[in-house]
Length: 389
Image (cartoon, rainbow, N blue to C red; front, side):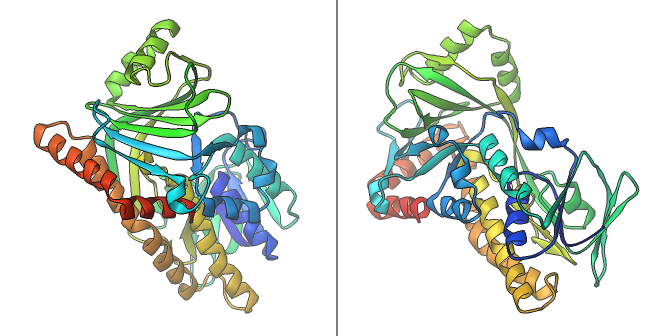
């Protein structure tokens, strides 16, 4: 089989890239180990994606936004961050600081995946090979090759990995990556609650735990709880009533009593940043390129940005009749995406290190930093501008 571009991974970033390139007339093959039924109708995975204004514009351009049920899209109008139990040590960011009515939107991850699939299957230039494992990948100066477990091969001018932050393809192509295991697990699920949230997102850097509440429609919220893994296991063993009481208490009854209304999903917290985003005839997008800690809610937004940066360079080369997998194309992608992601990746790791340390000196420093930031209007405007564009 032959294509202009081959993509390993049919997650939302892989599918968005396929759709963007196919719209420009390129022939694309997408390979994924999941069966077609799972790609067509992905199940709820607990994750609510905080989309920036820039990401929404891109999803709209790629025909995804209108495919998502409007009733499932929640406004994010205001964000508050606290250190410990005392609310005086905190920072508040309002949408008005970015000259918008809201900071962004919360959209269920599985609905983004479904919308991306629907957009892809309408494209005649895209072939999706589902339920197939990749056995090997390689590249030469002339092209890239994927070897499949059914003994078939795919030849393309450019190979792209969109196969998660634990990408086997990235490793097979010889790209080193900084991988930081934060030693914690994250649990996500939905709750109903008694008091209105007014579409405010809260995040508490507590001692021994990090908690977030993301506002959803109809007096519901998404709980994001980070704990050491052994504590997470103990929490999961509680019966429903004890679990609901525990969660309500952990969140200081800020929204009154809370009751879980969805399945619980637990994920390990691991950050990843490769030494580069390309090799010969090869590029990384999505979490395979940058795997973020969720504290800054930029993981999927960076994935969308990687699709934008790579597709723009590939399409420009294609429109000029040039080689879409040329070193200059891919080097330009690495420079651009590194410039737009490395500062926040480094800052996120600094925040995580400081605000998950529980010894006395760290507590004093983190309170001082957050209190000072909360009083600096220019800094808060910068944060709001980053979200609102």
